[in-house]
Image 1 (spheres, helix red, strand yellow):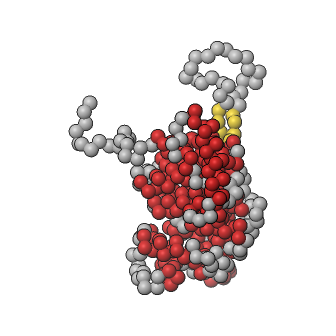
Image 2 (tube, rainbow, N blue to C red):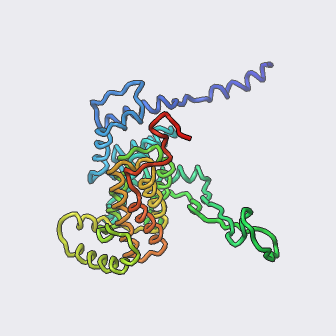
Image 3 (cartoon, helix red, strand yellow):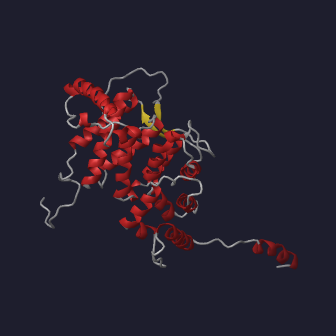
Amino acid sequence: MSDDEATATTPTTSAVTFTPNSSDKIQFALQSLCTIVNPTLSITSSTTPLSILNELKIYNQIATLLRQPSSGAGDNNLCRWLYDTFQSNVGDLQLTVLRFLPIIAGVYLSRVADRKPQAGFEAVLLALYAHETNSRAGEAVTVTIPDMSHPSVYHEFKAVVNKNGATDLNIVVLSPSLEPHGTVRSTRRARIVGIAFELFYNKISQMPVAPKIDFCKFCKIWAGEDGDMYKNFEDEDEDEEEEEEEENNEVEIQKVGEGGEEFVKSGRVPMPWELLQPVLRILGHCLLGPNNRDTMLFENASEACRCLFARAMHDVNPKAILPMRSLLRLSKNVDVDDFDPTEPPKTDVITL
């Protein structure tokens, strides 16, 4: 190598800066969290985000801090920690932040009507939205459905004259294209929160039961309906009577001045389709997913479905009534203690 070549490579090597590895970021993030939540908690080299947050006591402490009146402020230390931790681009740390998304979004949406600044919560939600926008390159999520007017290759059919001979494909948009947003406006709020829930749903198989239960509880608050009139929702013939009971119960709720009904009404939020669609996916997982054998989760998910169905009927939202009605029927037909034929047999002897 000549002297000129050696000289040319020197600035390149000297310009390299040190970047902490994942383990250093995790240790720093956990130590910072302890100073906010529990200063007496000891952090060692073997401590991981999942091990510390799997402790119900720590989870409840963080949940309590997120529910405090000043939790969503821009100078809130916990919100700043959640934002910085998610921006670390470490998978375990990002998963840790997602565990608290139901509480963050639940408290945030419930306080929108109060018109109080929530810059801390909005920063976290915008970080999740930006992450999903970058990962999808702003593209929409679509699925292709074959044209049902064309016969299947597995069935006999009569010859039909087809001018072009091509099979048309119907493209269904599951999630529209994304645009980068730096602020949360009233017209963008549902979209930003909905994308955050889509990210939560993509990682829901790695989520414990506690955040799922919190999500179901907030769904009942957002719905603003108690859904008690649909507890015996089974027969098609009872639909008209149930609609009348719904209207009567709504009047009764407005007249009641104390108790849980007033709290439910006070937390009512707009539920456009861009927010309701990921909510339905998460509720479907809570009802039919591997954790549905947890009695508390299944009961809270069933109650959330009843409340959201009552809300869809009240708003006369045809796009939401059909999927909510399907989830409500599934919640009635699923037996938590029922035998699962997909599970391996309990005996080692296989009978042929």
